[in-house]
Amino acid sequence: VGAISCGSDKAKENDNKPESAVLAMNSAQTDLGKVMKISNVATRQPGKAVNFTWNENGKDVTFAEYTKNKVVFLNFWATWCGPCKMEIPEIIELYKEMKPQGVVFLGVSLDRDKSEDAIVTKINKFVQDKKINYTNFIGNEKIVNEYGGIRSIPTTLIIDKEGNVIETIVGARDKAAFKAAIQKAMK
Image 1: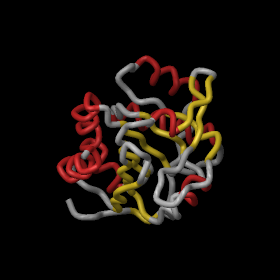
Image 2 (image 1 turned 45 degrees about the horizontal axis):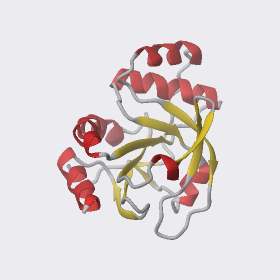
Image 3 (image 1 turned 30 degrees about the horizontal axis):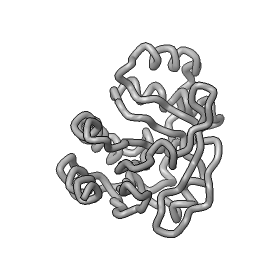
């Protein structure tokens, strides 16, 4: 697959389902990934992954803690982006294959809506519908800016065990291309 991407200023969808209904459906599907809200974003150190925080089960978790000594696949995407939707099945399959090797897969949705709750509802529904099995976050301007401004999506960052961004992939790729980038980071 060539480098197909969406500009970040495309029209957005609107989903009006109550968040509680979608969250209940998602929690019943234990094989589906979680959708988390980013609560704090640190200033990026040159060449490094951005540390950010989220609350999970009443405890603050940081990206640095969660990914310590692990290779990370960090994918910026949106529900309205055709190339993003095209590569998600490839990412799901790769996650199944690479998770036992300790690779962490995370997504950051750049969807926008009238409220944060509406975005959470939209992403939870999308995760359920597409059977996404890895954790996703609701992105914000701070994380986009700290990564130098994500200008096109999908954009995927491959991060090594020391937290260094070793590859930035702009545009959709297939499973083989992603796997090759991850394997390079594992060396």
